Length: 453
Image 1 (cartoon, rainbow, N blue to C red):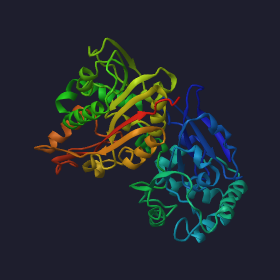
Image 2 (image 1 turned 180 degrees about the vertical axis):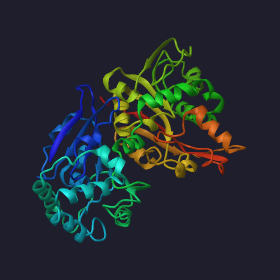
Image 3 (image 1 turned 120 degrees about the vertical axis):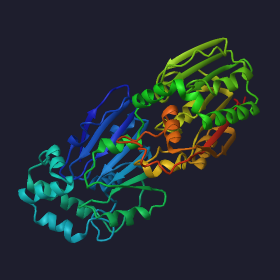
Image 4 (image 1 turned 45 degrees about the horizontal axis):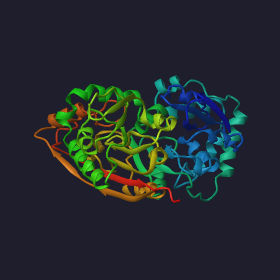
């Protein structure tokens, strides 16, 4: 297969890797661009081989595989190099009467392929003439080569394939005229750990839309919380409750008084003002995606405006405490972030973090394409226990009641937490029945093991 680097910077350690479908190439990724991420496309099934050494320079790799690319990615990629994998209108068994494209249809396309049938296929793939024209001509007009690619996939597709990649979500289109919707649904339901997201769309879905459902754009998040800053404290009822509870758990760890503190995602300082008077920090470094402070809670305060996930990789100062309240759910690679926190803590240093678990704001799930990728409590515990001691992971539930759907909407607007999905967003008509929002915070505390002499 062929690898095309669409966007690349020597400073980036995160990669969006796209496996394209048959007869398509890098053109499907031309509008994919996120700060801090390289973008690569793999396409062309002429030879089902791929030198994957290009992955070695990346710490975080998000895979988005579409159509036959789902099968090819599973076949060719090393699972240990993929952080999270997302399937779009495809299965690991692309030629299957029950779990993929029915055999007669697949081989009928292969045997009857010519210029006219290729264009008919791409029109069915696109769903309408406007999208068909936007996609342009087929990437490869060599009919014999395209036929060879289909034959390659059919020959390599066995009777079964175990999923080794970390598939997180499978997006399947109800109006797909290439992979039957019922077959995709049947296949992905067999993998209990994979979340299924159904779309009202044809086989082709703009890959940038799916990526926007999964990866938070730091620029958009920054604008959202920047607009909400003036009203945040008044409306952030659940966040304030979580901040108080996290501060109590932090103090139960008996932190060093007068030490050096790193706070990630301090925002308006709800959590800051809960813990800072108690720990009397000598210095606090505040890192947030928007400008914050000054808070006047430590003898020395430093304010950094940056994507904390990127920043913490580059600055190797050590701290007595690293704390964060209701922020890391926006991060793309939480396990790596926790590992870096371990590296940035002094021996015996304390980590105290709150985030959210699956089911957070579940009342909104039917109104948006897909929620954030919230980590499971069990996964958080596993990631922490590998490097920390005195690990505590405690789940919570906070229900916030409102008098009307309008109040719900205002709460989401004034706190900036309505989700990161692109598109039309939430509409009052969709929310007319809502009077409650359920937050599911989880509190993490842990201690870096002291050096044993």
